Amino acid sequence: MYRKNAWKKYADDNSVVMDFAEKYKHFLSECKTERLVTRYAIKLLEENGYVFADKVKSVKKGDKIYFTNKNKNVAAFIIGEKPLAEGMRILGAHIDSPRLDLKENPIYESKGFAMGNTHYYGGVKKYQWVTFPLALHGVIVKKDGTVVEVNIGEAEDDPIVGITDLLIHLSADQQAKPLAKAIEGEDLDISLGSIPLNDKEKEPVKANVLRLLKDKYGVEEEDFISAEIEVVPAGKARDYGLDKSMIAGYGHDDRVCAYTSLLALLDSKPGEFTSCCILVDKEEIGSVGATGAQSLFFENIIAKLAILMNDANPMWTARLALENSKMLSSDVSAAFDPLYASVNDPQNSAYFGEGIVITKYTGSRGKSGSNDANPEFYAEIRKIMDDAGVVWQTAELGKVDQGGGGTIAYILGNYNMNVIDAGIAVLSMHSPMEIVSKVDVYEAFLGYRAFLK
Ligand code: MN
Ligand code: MN
Image (cartoon, rainbow, N blue to C red; front, side):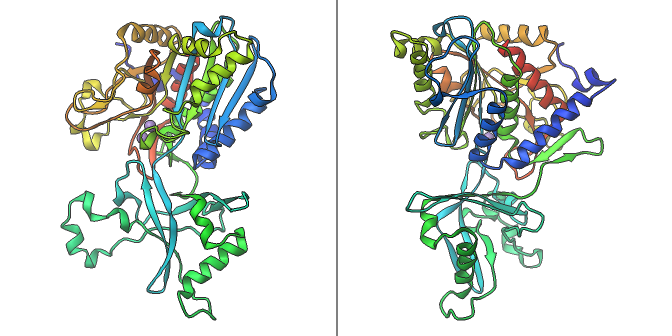
């Protein structure tokens, strides 16, 4: 069988795997929001000679160009030899991750505490987010259009925030509840402070916190209405396991596939077909909205590419280009967890250390909502991976009736494009501390690069 342990490939020298992991850890630690991923990606693209699309008047084969959308999407291209209408080779990943967002009117005072009200984003097991060090990242946009960037909880001398949990001594009622009910969404409020402002009689602790925010960021309470503050796990990504074979961190889903896909593009040369890496937002809440995979953004920029190529019928060329494209939907897969073996079919599970995971279909309740890739296309992918010596495995998301999930694959599939999911196995997915295997991260990079060739 193709299935093997990828570490054996690097038995003599695994430094290439470990060095790649160091670069990825830096990226993951720096990029706790989709905006920060976008900015980091743009920096890497520009360092590698990619030019912002608004700055060019025309493109030709061999050119490297990128587009952005509302500070939350990036799409980068290397123009290939063949006409655009013959299709592209696309890697697509999402850069949003589950988290807690501050509400529009978040700050309140209760019994001597200033608190921050949150609304969780994406699928979270709420009990995992209490008694965990949290940081605040995001932007506050003032009425005059000034964008104030917020980052609290990462620097060594910064305070962190967090969500308290009931002490075990008084948890008789809570402990009797089902796990999903033990911590409710409205109870995921963060502690912001406890010192009262001396000359204030009404809500003095809240007033003091607002004073601190005004001093540091120049913002008023009302400015939180037009803000996007994400409450995320504080701290850097770390090596995990005594052998340092794994990485623990927040946001592997799906920044691990975003990073490896982007680096695969950066490491590629102009080829037969135009290569593309697109990073999208909002996957965790259904790929909706202007910056999600369902947005017309991608379709529009393909038409813009055609216009930059002086194409006589750019809209139709864009349609053909999308229909004739082939895509890896770069998204994470559920790793087999020996502590919870019963939720998986062992013969169709993703294992740590066995390389990039190719997933023919996702979905739940009988593949519902799944792209279910064509076997003709899957056969091509098998050949690409095997010819390039990439260690890969195939898996589906757990036992048939156990649950399920989705990716952006079906959305691009709607263009009549061949799409298959390909990504990295994750343990403790959607938790504040997700785990990946370093060798899987590297094999995914190799797999993505082989696909673009
Ligand atoms: Mn994902
Ligand atoms: Mn997810």
